[in-house]
Image (cartoon, rainbow, N blue to C red; front, top):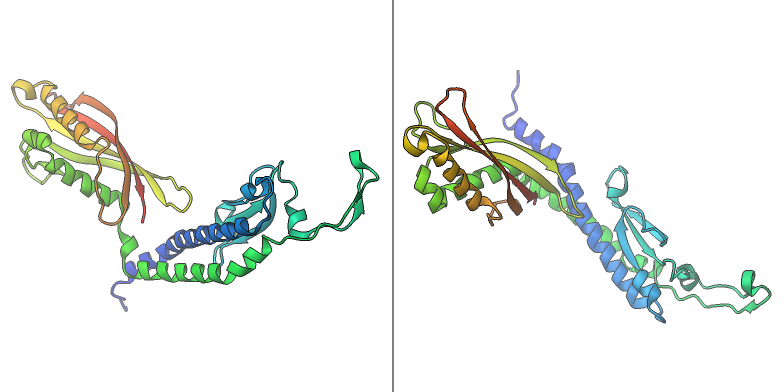
Amino acid sequence: MTKVIGLDRLNRKLALLPIVARKRIREAMAEGAAEIVRMMKSLVPTDSGALKNSIDWTWGSAPKGALTIATVRGQGMRSTGSENTITIYAGNADAYYARFVEFGTEAHTAGGMFAGATIPAIAASPFFFVSFRANRKRVNGRITRAVNKAAREVAGGRWLVDPIHELRSAVISALKADATVASFVASRVYDRPPSGTVTPPYITMGPADAITDDADCIDGLEVTMQIDCWSWGSNEAYGSAEVSKISGAVRTALHEAEIALPTNALAILRHRITRYQRESDGTTNRAIVSITAFVEVN
């Protein structure tokens, strides 16, 4: 049997490539769309400013009432819905004449409330498609570079950093560095306690879960993490007094704390809830601190 050394790591990198490429492509598409919109606004004739102000782009379908005059899908991206499609649009209920300005009109006889009136021809004042054509190569090139950048990042292992593990390690370091927490547990803050007898009181990391919470061009995770505070013994440690003080110090140390992550970015960290309980042995006191964080995956 032949064994390929490093095959598991390679497979993980290959699995990550579509995810990273999607993020980079979306960033490039958004940047390109904004560039096209800027040029459109610089070229469109301005009277009241209503048409100029209506020009914009969005992921998916245009807002209700707008006239869509172009839809762009990122190259190399599967059509899985609106999250992969940018729509550039102009016009709304007030600026309903976007197409008339872009393409012009022929002389014609009006109907409706102005029936019979002769409407002269209006010359075209192109502002949309000329902007799209002028920027198309640049945008396509930007997307191609984004795919290549994603491949380099994955090959270099940057995206193999798990955001939850990174946050977990950062929380442990923050608790160990906090003077109030250390006054109770010294350096006894563990991912999991060492085997054998552990001197109380101490802190351990409990389970964690993450929910995908993406915004435009941002891959995010909403992480809920449990921190367990343990205490037993005599005096304050006999009841819940000591473990309550420890959990309070943990809450103060972490609530809205600004903690730097080596690879990803912590946008916000908040205390969610603390519960107290006595374990089944009848002597161990436990405080369960729950925190919630939003992590931007870089």
